[in-house]
Length: 112
Image (cartoon, rainbow, N blue to C red; front, side):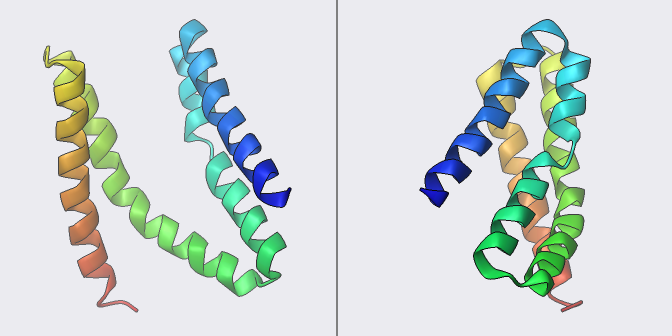
């Protein structure tokens, strides 16, 4: 039952952002940019393990991985504004972001 609650809460968040975006992209962006997903992950992790150090470690790793996430939104936005097909732009953004994640994980390995 606990797992089903996790799925429903997470799915409702994604659906809410999608519905809000139909009316206001700015408000949807505010909701999507809030650390709601991370907060839910922290709560689920803490409830499952009771280990606040695991939550702290996850939080620290999220900080590092926010950096390559910016590449996704930048590439997608620029590609779409430049007239690129949606699916191609999405694929390109995912590909470039994957490379940025790989580079960031490589750099992170020197600090752990």
